[in-house]
Amino acid sequence: MENITNYIQQNKDRFINELIELLKIPSVSADSAYSQDVIDTSEAVKRSLEKAGCDKVEICETDGYPIVYAEKIIDPNLPTVLVYGHYDVQPPDPMELWTSPPFEPVIKKTAIHPEGAIFARGACDDKGQMYMHIKAFEYMIQSKTLPCNVKFMIEGEEEVGSVNLKSFVENNAAKLKNDVILISDTGMISNQQPSITTGLRGLSYVEVEVTGPNRDLHSGLYGGAVANPINILSKMIASLHDENNRITIPGFYDKVEELSLKERAEMAKAPFDIEEYKKALDLNEVYGEEGYVTNERNAIRPTLDVNGIWGGYTGQGAKTVIPSKAFAKISMRLVPNQDWEEITQLFTTHFTAIAPAAVTVKVTPHHGGQGYVTPINSIGYQAANKAYTETFGIPAIPVRSGGSIPIVSLFEKELKSKTILMGFGLDSDAIHSPNEHFGIFNYLKGIETIPLFYKYFVELSK
Ligand code: BES
Ligand code: MN
Ligand code: MN
Image 1 (cartoon, rainbow, N blue to C red):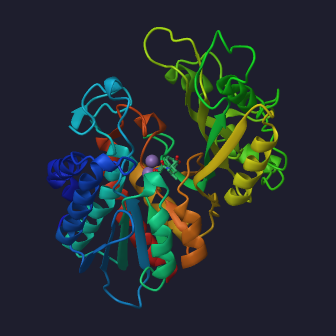
Image 2: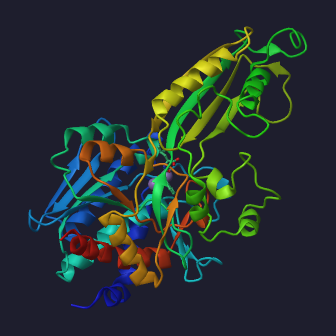
Image 3: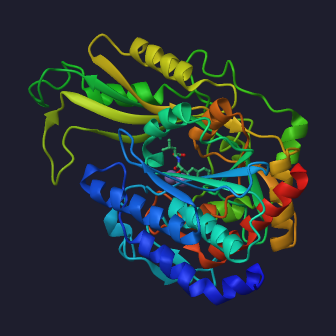
């Protein structure tokens, strides 16, 4: 049996075509119009796990979309790796900004991906990265090199908060028992510099509704005499940050983990070019909390951002109206030790308190989750680092990410195991955005690196 690089060379067109077929199914979990497609995708994932060589493959029904569970147990005395990923994707809108349709994958070359990248919703987040694990597993089965037991748990509700996965994990701790959890659903610094994600931020996501008069009013007849809920909401939102861009909610920073200057100096060693960063986003200047640099602001500091705001008339032309209601969706990214439920409560109390008597305010919490940090001296981290060192020729750098995968902290709590985040995406891959893509280099490098993680994890566990 050939080695992994030969195997990839011989099978790469098939690997790419299989992923393209998976990307054609629009598994948008947030929009019920796609519900049959989400279910169809779970079936496709099930078939691919069967074909790759799992013994037991199940569709586990939940109150929402199914969880695909599979395993290959070769010897109960050997370690077990649990692979987690998600087959659902974000909504594709705004459609008009895609250069090719989101569910008709095409390969295009870019400056960062000279060997081509697959453009499609979910290419990087997370179908492409999840599928690398199935192909790496296929290789280990074919070459008879699988060194331990494997369990797969691929869910269809990550992009909407993993609500049903939570109870599935709580109720199936024995079935999911493992020695390490492996996830590819994050990024790395660049194709020349691998990194391992050692931290994820937590999240509290809320929706607010501000009501003024009981109906829309003529803005001439009533303007100036009643509260305009859009004006009020804007003012309230603006007051949530002070002149140093710190969040003004009382108690918000109380539990925030403060990193030592030594740890911050360590973080600053990761290669990063602020000029390139600004250029890539067409920004004249970056913006954020006083006293912290960009890579701290987006990783070790908590944030509060409006994700959407609406109300009143937004159609063509002008309509003179004072709306009855205004709305906003607000996310808070949290750092270690901040509890998302407590933060949601602090937000609700504060936001209600700052509302003038002329309006009423309703706060509706959506989903949330705790942050995560993992040490770099674990066997799992060391195994991942050895794997990257071998396939990239240089060691990986530990990096805390600003994104969230809330289920990771629950895994630690319920399954008592550490998660290793071996991400192969790039920040420029436009996840959650039009023209999402995943480099062919990254896809194949992932397939090449993953079997080495298994090998070194088992070796180091002895
Ligand atoms: N894969 C992302 C999270 C991510 C991406 C972490 C890149 C680190 C680097 C995941 O699918 C995601 O989008 N998570 C959501 C949270 C979820 C509760 C909707 C997020 O971070 O907004
Ligand atoms: Mn993801
Ligand atoms: Mn996502």
